Length: 78
Image (cartoon, rainbow, N blue to C red; front, side):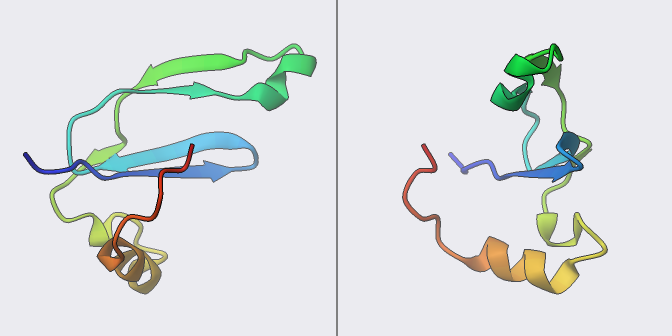
């Protein structure tokens, strides 16, 4: 089984895009919204782009994204 890759792009504190090499669903939990009256949980979202080769998913950062995708996964984020 291949391991799905998900790239999450946030701009101005908001979910902007989700790129993936698999058809996935994501739910965003923004704890910063808890005290502002905005929704803490939004979604589910489907990827903005599902593409086997994600190295070209972000045309503004082609070299950086390709280099990051080539790195092995570090320890879990959470």
